[in-house]
Amino acid sequence: MSNSLHWLARLIDRSLSLFVSLLTGVRPKFSGSLNFSPEKKVYYANHASHGDFVLVWISLPQKWREVVRPVAGADYWLGGKIRRFIIQQVFNALLIMRNGNDPKAITAQMTEALQNGDSLIIFPEGTRNTDDDVVLLPFKSGIYHLARENPDVQFVPIWIDNINRVLPKGKLIPVPIICDVQIGDELRLHPNESKDEFLQRARDAMLALAPKHKRDLALPQPLSKQKTQENQS
Image (cartoon, rainbow, N blue to C red; front, side, top):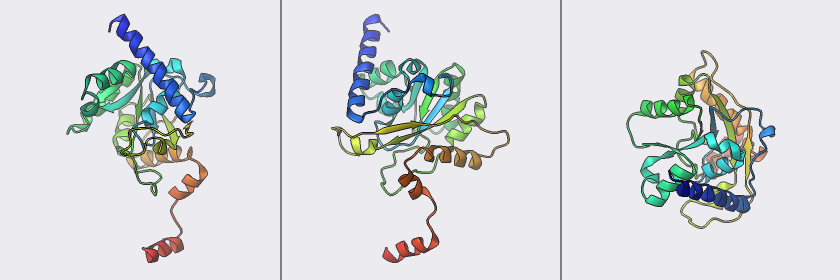
């Protein structure tokens, strides 16, 4: 990339970060407040909006972003010159083919980036959660396979709150609303830990960062309440 394009990419990064910070109130964390190093991490977050990865991006210490790569769908982001420039040059994203039939190839692609020292941003729900009555969708198994292939890599849970109200589905103009990004402690796959055990532990670690009223909604409901809801339906 030429110096002028590199300068333009950095200008867009700073301008976009400033705009989103003013819109949501989210600011970069201080590196001293995070109990881990920036390299070879998988940041995994709940997914409610197209703006999720930008909030994770700007919440990390600015210097750390040099090794962080959002994992994004190539089918969408390569659909135009501006989108391609932003996702490749501004965010240095790892582009994957979401509609492919080879999940092992995607895991291998992410493994290569991690083993090169990069960190990744992923959304293990696999799709945006647009149901206000569902706090968190079940995790897809991809995060487990990524952990199994990279036992030396730490996974960092992140909870993003309120972003779905800033840019609701079907809307193009964002609404200024205070959001919050909570970053948890890193975890890794335990020896002999099963897929279901790891997925549950990773999901619980993310939910623990959510506001209490949302954590309560995610808990199994008492049988009496379930029957009441069934009678009302």
